[in-house]
Amino acid sequence: MSSVGKGVASASIGKILQSRGYKVANVKCDMYVNIDAGTIRPAEHGEVFVGEDGVEADQDLGNYERFTDQICTRDNYITTGQVYQEVIRRERNLEYEGEDVEVVPDIPNEIIRRIKSCQKKNQSDVTIVEFGGTAGEYQLLLFLEAARMMKWKEPKNVFFVLVSYLPTPSLLGEQKSKPTQYAVRTLNSAGISPDFILCRADKPVSDNIKNTISTVCSLEKDRIISAPDVYSIYDVLLNFEKENLGEIILKTIGLKAKKNDLKDWKLFSEKIRNIKNEVTIGIVGKYFNLKSCRDTYISVIESINHSAWWHNAKPNIVWLDSEKYENNPENLKELDKMDGIVVPGGFGKRGTEGMIMAAEYAFQKKIPYFGLCLGMQIMTIAFARRILNTKDANSTEFSPKTKNPVISTMDEQKKLIKEKNYGGTMRLGACPAKLNKKSLSYEAYQVGEISERHRHRYEFNNNYREVLEKNGLKVAGVNPQRNLVEIIEAEGHPWMVGVQFHPEFKSRPLSPHPLFREFIKAAINK
Image (cartoon, rainbow, N blue to C red; front, side, top):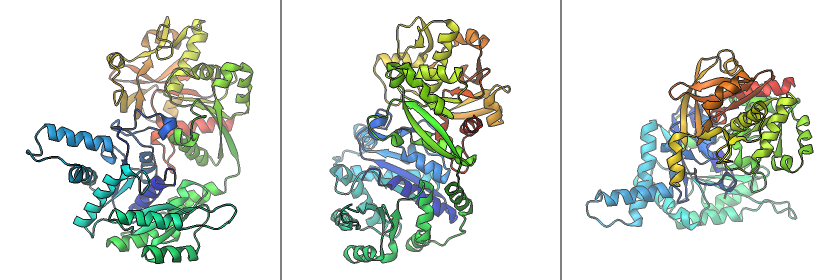
């Protein structure tokens, strides 16, 4: 089921096999008919993760990258929409040579082709494929059929892991395995028998439960792995290792460990458990009332975690609804309790006036501020309103008829917006930026040119660059090919930085992103 931990389990298995000396690749298969995740509301499906090549994908690709430190691209992401689109394209081009095209086997065959293509391009020894959804769902059936066909054709090369939830009814206080038994029988009806079961629960799974699952599901007891709640997601793979999952997997798939190296990961896990000092970071946003904030901003949260832990501080993240500031400016005083604030990415006008007020407050009160994509544009508007002495300064996204469009539509985006051509058409993926050597950003990166991932339609309007720079808004990073402003900083402020890109996509637990690291350092100093 959703949020049970399939993505973290897949990423953990990848890291475990990687630590044994094998090259791995992770693939996420999503059941929806969307071509990608780019047109889905973050509050509906969670964060849209952007790959190096600009793919707009499910948030689990972020887990894969954070755990294995490998770059994900569109090869690592498959949706039902992509599969049907390609099969129909091939049919229209006569690539089936006159044969009738059928849902089975042609749809499963396209799924298999994509999985094998990813393995080939990544030259991986082992490829971990995660199916989103729940066993028994209609929309999952064709992916299960693809898995069954793969196992039938290559029985010694394909293995299945079921991640299943064991509930503990509060009045009983006892774990129940019946949902897992039912899930296994549902998979059996699709021609699949799991080789491993990861038992997700609030507490470790008892031997009695393992014995029951082993007997009913015809599975050796050592392949039934306890997966209880842990301190952080980065403890999951270490928990698996306590149950020898790595060794059992290698034995099952007929491989021998070339090495066994999780030393740094173990030291990291031990370190973050024992941190006492705390740093409080406020996230000023607007997607707080619809679904899980954690899913909506997962990469931002993890980037804050990585950098706080790096500086031996425990992150305390506070959710700040920007609309409260619009309703009552007195509410801005809650920012005084923050060691630093982040304004993350987002779309649409709602809540942006409150974000602008928060950015101005952070400037006046010297509160460390980090603006990500939309947060950089918000910071620009706040400065422009003060410098130009007009509240009319705005973005054409929020006010199309503004007389001072300090943030404006990118030229190549105007036609796309007019034609309502939205999917996969933003400025997406990795782009370079040259840094001003006399900037906080250069101090963080310690290099003259960087590459970061983008996802936006609007940009800093260079017509206002000169007047803003003369009045204290430093341009710290510029795209060299197109002269687009990528990073801005506030002169005379301890740490106020806005970036047009999404640095959160490149932060790793053992190597935090340089800008997040310096932002948290400034917050701790405050």
